[in-house]
Image (cartoon, one colour):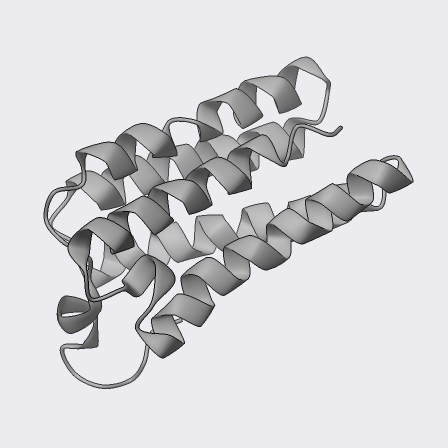
Amino acid sequence: MVKPQSGALQRRTRPNNREVQHITSLSFLLNAIHGLIRGAYGYGAAFLALVTTSVVFHTSDKSIIIFLIDQAAIFLVFLIGLYYVFQIRREFQILALISIVAVIIMYYGGYLTDSLCYDKCPQTSIANHCGMHIIGSVCKFHR
């Protein structure tokens, strides 16, 4: 979610030290491999796109184009994830829905409230962002 104010991306980006963030982005590779092995090719391809855009975003100069491409990959994983939520057993559906809501709150809710992934404290911001990567990855191993 990009606010239309000029310079919003530069003002709202997290600290420059992103080593941990791009390492936790690599956790999405496990989802891609898992999806491809299980025959869920759309799921695997979406996570492969996400790991690529996420690593590029966390290791780049944060241009608006890279940001928008990363957001598109996130939205693709979200849509495909919602589709697969209804293809799995009930107990895993609850876990998947909780993880989806948690990621939305941590990222977009944090953006709106200057907290969680967008906390003013750099260490808190990075820790929450890494936690969001892990929640988004681990809680998708339900298929």
